[in-house]
Length: 223
Image 1 (tube, rainbow, N blue to C red):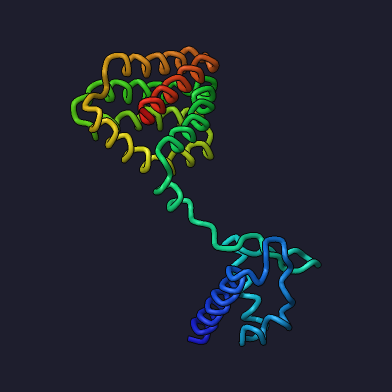
Image 2: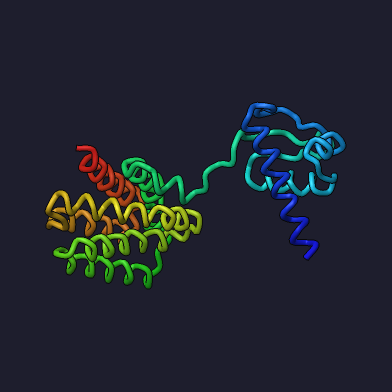
């Protein structure tokens, strides 16, 4: 029980310290007073101050520098990744996809295994068979692109794509419903060409085709 109370007190101290930072008592780059000054100012002990500082450091507000002290690095707790993506303009998401998927396509052309190529072919075929239902079309399209990320053998790029996936899916479904058409022959042919470039290990062509495809998608979104 004492541990629970101590954590609760540290959280309260962290909230109070953050409030004073928000109010402008310290700016970014400023050094905080030492524990012996902060403890009575916050009405807690030095161990609680240390825990409060650790919490705010973990949230990106403070940084402890060995031998130098504690410094302010942000005036508020940065928004978490999911909150940022939820509000992100879909055009910004597509721009991020360009940065991720162009490189991934080139890497996939260089690194894909025969098994991964078979998975991509199945995903492409599945995509071609789901052109009527918007949600199924978007899901099969994303499965194809995710297959490219897996074939790239880049865990970080795959993780970034996964973070963008829910926001991208919602936007694509909404956009295609508004347009009233999707999955035409030209669009499917573009994906076939991307697959062929990966199959033939042409990294440059795979990257170029992916960039062109996503830039075309971006133009459709801003019309």
